[in-house]
Image 1 (cartoon, each protein chain N blue to C red):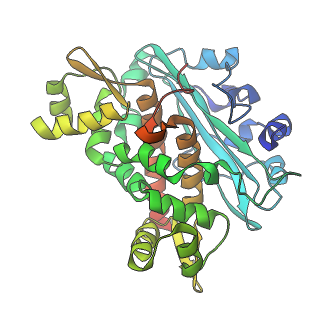
Image 2 (tube, each protein chain N blue to C red; image 1 turned 90 degrees about the vertical axis):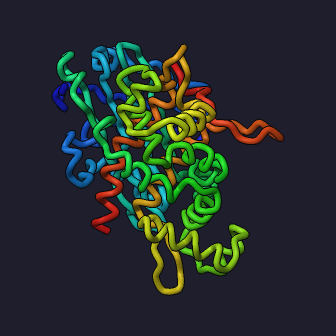
Amino acid sequence: MLAWDRALETAPITKAAFGPPGRRDRPRPIEQEWVEFTKDDQDTVVYLAGAWNRSGTRMAWGMGAVYLGGENYDGGHSHPAIRASAASVERLLSPLAHEARIRIMQAMYDGPKSPDELAQATGLKGGGLFEHLKDLLDATYVTKKGAAYDLTPLGCQLLVTIAVFADLVVRERKEG
Amino acid sequence: MVPWDKAPVTKAALWTSLDEQGPPPIEGEWHGLVNHDQDVILFWGGAWNRGGRRLGWTWIGWHVAEDEEGAREPNEITRTPAANVERMLAPLAHEARIRIMQTLYLGPKSSGELSEATGLKGGNLYYHLKELMHAAYVTASDFAYDITPLGCQMLITVASIAGKVVADRGEQGLMVTSGGWEE
């Protein structure tokens, strides 16, 4: 059994571990049981879970990862953060690391949009708009439905994930 | 908004293994929480140590529209300034910088050690380090570089996601895929 399988069996999952939704504040201390759970050097618990609907359609479930140092602990080398190829991270993020493309994806969040509607919502015009759309299509974050463009389930998941945290990250950066 | 104390939090909401083909069904109580249009529940939480130091706690996102009126209101997804997303992701969207951060994840490193581990040299290495320090994902002290708690959080998140949704197609290169993520 893998370390994170074992970990999940014994991991405490409590409301306190998530904290109340005062998300404009700094992260809150998690209950004592979590402190105990991560007392070993380089222990990690990270999870991302949830579910969402969009325009009445259930889009997807989230993902989770639990990794804890244990008897098979190898100094962190098998951690997902280390195992992922750096090129795959670039492939994942490059299409998203542009303000204009995020505006395009945000405009589609409440439903498919025609090129005219996208141009109006984002302020992008002609070739610039289609260039960004092509990159988002290539990345499978956006799909074409007839004359309209729409988010894919994956694109919607990534938009939800990064948009929620971007404000927090930028704020944390200023504090540091 | 669904009151915080009424929200279910269960182990079934988590995947049991990174190698699993897809997420398991979440318990019935979760279905009840997301039956409104555009409901969103997003958790990202936890804690970690590294090198004997507690690096930080993570964050939580929570948005559940209670009724149709609430569902139409702008939420965090559409309200977040797109420029902030670019500022968060642009420093990370480079293979070389991810290699640097992965190396630092295992502990502080000198520039010589970083060069050896990543294959980056001289001005090129320093250019990427400077960008990562400007973004507060990496810090420098006493002739060594180290990953910051924020950088550690970002690395774990983006690498975990990339490991799930980016497929290696051999000579055809890498491709983003939604395999394993869709319901």
